[in-house]
Amino acid sequence: MKNILVKFMQESGRSSEFKLFLDMFHHLPKIKFAVIKISGKSLDDHLEKIAEDIACLNKLGIYPVIVHGAGSALDASLPSSKKVDGIRVTSKEDMQVIKKVFKKIGTALAEKIVAHGGSAILLDQVFECQQMPAYGEVGAITNTHLQSIANAIELNQTPIISPIGGEFIDSQYREYNINADSAAKELVMSINPAKLIMITETGGILNEEGTIIPFINASDLSDLKSVSGGMLLKIREIKDFLDHAKDCAVVITSAQKLLQEIFTIKGSGTYIKNFLIQSASSWQDLNLQSVRSLLENAFGKKLTPTYFEQAVVEILFEKNYEGIAVIKSIDGIAYLDKLAVSTANQGTGLGKSLWHELTARYPSFVWRATLKNPANSYYMKHAQGMIKTQNWYFYWIGLKEELIFSTAQKVINLERTMLENL
Image 1 (cartoon, helix red, strand yellow):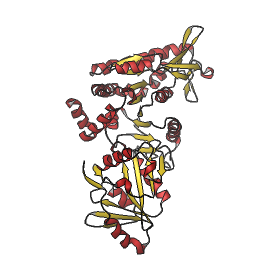
Image 2 (cartoon, rainbow, N blue to C red):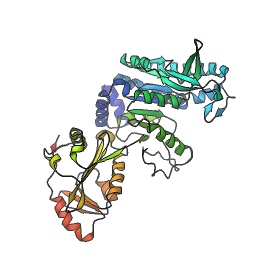
Image 3 (spheres, helix red, strand yellow):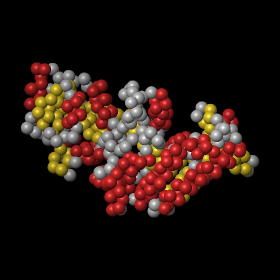
Image 4 (cartoon, helix red, strand yellow):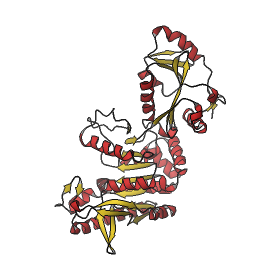
């Protein structure tokens, strides 16, 4: 593991984050780490790097489910083939070529993973399909067989799956070409992993200036005015997918940045998830142990024993307790007592989603933060005003001028609710 940590430090420089995420992944069932879909072009250009990083994951006891494409290789092997609605029209003769191309690519990836000290196995007959006659030998997935995948992972092998499915017709097995993105998404729907990681040439969703957008809340696309054309279509397709795979995140990254995306908070690429923000009017409506764990994880301090005895106006929280905003009242003025996001979800846009929900519900509110709070730069940018005291920053939005100083005095004199460091 020492060599892996050194490699990771060379690429990202964040050993503490590496250990945080490694521990989190090891608490997941082995099959639920991630489905990784690799574009054919990425494999053409970066096979060695991709295989090395997957082998690195294997050495850490992590075995992602791999689905690979072959678009560029198929274009070269079938130069006269056509696409309709983005789907390659496939004849029976084409299908024989496609099978050979996929086997060659899958075998090359598996051999490279093994050469770098990992373990991999090619799997077939994972997908049951029905033919889509308009496109020839192309199939729509009707069922996914997970047993061979689960068996491979239990044997500490990385399953590598080509997007080929089939069905039995008159006792004969007939194989079909499948869109690789569709195959990856069907696996996600069946496995319910933490992430679907898509390795592409762009390395993320790009805005009109060609800059990668680091995070997107799929439940609110109102911020995406700088995205258009094919990129916007891609986002809408992912949103539609996440509407049915609500607990999964989609990550689009590059072959060169895979480990950085997996093992750092900010990642490297575009992180897309449906963050469902819910509301409660009392602590009784929540799982208090989950709230305590979230707050103590986010702040690195212990919550006071009597915290949940204090009255609240409203609690906004992510449905899986990955983020929370606690609103109380001071003389009828909304007071943001806590705004927190779990360490693993910082940098994903969840905090921004909570903030948007908070400001939509409360046009006027106040809050405080310690002088060392890393969120102060964000608060200073979004607050209407700020007062610095010996121990606190006092912030406000929409507060009447005549109430600023009296309210600030009350807020900064409130007892601390987070105690000694954990």
